[in-house]
Length: 88
Image (cartoon, rainbow, N blue to C red; front, side, top):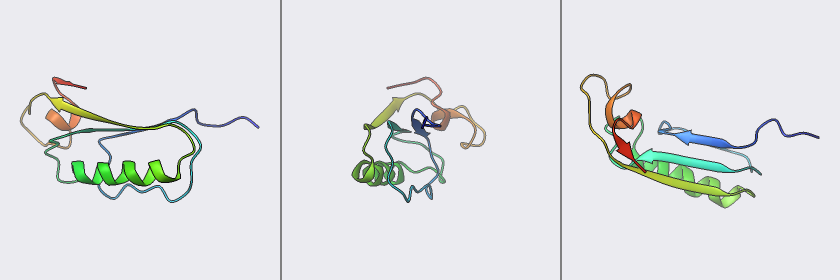
């Protein structure tokens, strides 16, 4: 049977994001260390990563994005939340 997904990337995921079943595929959780969006806090991304790491049979990685700048406007759609000018 062919897998429908080759892997999953959670990028700047919302605080309430949750995975409730075991996985068997590569997973990357990527998040800006100082994301200004109140709906996507860094500590919640860390918790999501730890939970997935415990139950995933595949590789699970966490990439912390640093730097960049805010661009004004709603932090849900601009600036560090969208990795403007940032680096891994």
